[in-house]
Length: 92
Image 1 (cartoon, rainbow, N blue to C red):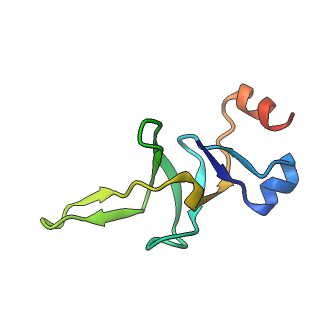
Image 2 (image 1 turned 60 degrees about the vertical axis):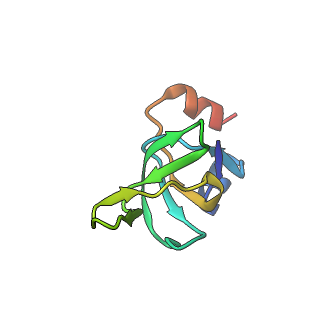
């Protein structure tokens, strides 16, 4: 599941998009939560959705749960590069 990279990262890595991983910093660009920024909490490969810190929906009992977002509706602002294999794949 890939998401578009920010313009800065596109210039740095010469790629338009990259696979989303837990820990990446993203900004929501479409939907009710447009403009919110946070780190990726979870990546659900089966449902093709991600959850982002700070993007929540309130239930009727006033508890808050993470709102699932499709990766195409976010832009990656900062990549989590602890994995050397991912870093080498991006710089290819």
